[in-house]
Image (cartoon, rainbow, N blue to C red):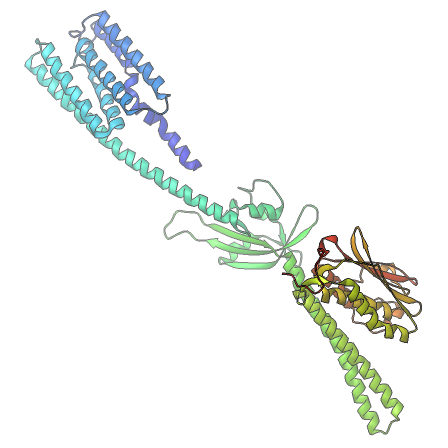
Length: 555
């Protein structure tokens, strides 16, 4: 659109002069009238100074009114007709009583023909030519002293002026049509460009178009967002804006690589570093722009960029997870397999029942460990996919009582005290009963595992922060160096007391994942050799409304 406006502005002065040329006639009338008055040109038709001054003054006044009229919006067709008629009438009078028909001033009528044609098309041209013919006829009638030769010259002048005006009008018509066609083409081009820019700006991926030298021509707002900048990037080199390095830290220049490959390609191993040191990984697709056959359009490149930092991180995390799981599964399977092989070998050699039992127990422990690991992996899979997170009205009191009853015998077997401290009238909550019970059960299991003496307390109370569920133990506690890692998968403390009991290193990681899935928070406090307290907080917004019954499922 900007280009179109610029083109219109280019044509406006010319169109303005052509359409309004008649109003500038006094600039010709005055000097020509003075020449006729003083005899420098044919003065036979000059009546007197009074007529000359009145005609010039009237023409100037009409011209001034015309320019004032142009500022009136909207203009009317009737007013255009009146002003055009006045210009023709005053020019006719000037020709008849000042300059004469056979003078050079008559060529002013060409201007009248063109102006009439531009404003009223062919009808205006015909009317102006008719006025010219009438002026010639009146000239012959008013000036009886004209010779036959001069009368013929008047007729020739009419035809010549008409022919010149008609030719110019036709050329102008053709030019106008071409100008209109060009304007429409440019308007369509601008429209298509705006559509293209709108499409590019609506894309979620960053898009950059450059010339063959890598100078940026077009880009979208997503690129500015990706690079966290508001700078104007037009004209800058894409390799200066995007300082990329590969996985080895080597600088990569996209334009050079695009020139060398000369085909569409993509890369996922490139990184971009912000001014503050933050690094993101990028997916970049590069496609060359090939102009049409015999086209003079310049070539270039299209770059599409996407931040894949998260995807890369997840990919690396997945690879690490598979590697660790493979290792964790291989160890118990190998030990169990070895234990069972020992039993067979010992039995063949007639070993005592005690030795066989010891080998069988060792193998059985590894099978239990493997079963626990599989259960934890299954719970983790459910947490990752959100399975089992059926939202319902949960009676937390009943759930905690059930967990207490299920773990009481195990606590007593270890000579540990298991307490249940629940405030009266705890609110029901809208959440996943399965997830809440699994979180608390894992916390209690851990507490029983790492507590040698003393006891474990399951506590629940309502506060301004929400419904607080705590599992407190008097166990070995967690060192400060371990505290920042306890929610990491497969992490186990190097404390020998931790290593004494089997564990998968997934329990707390699963608890954290489950809590996040249903909008709960899981925090802890611990002191080495004094025990730990894990806290699950259900926010008030998840409290059930009055009258809601436990077990009611919600959409």
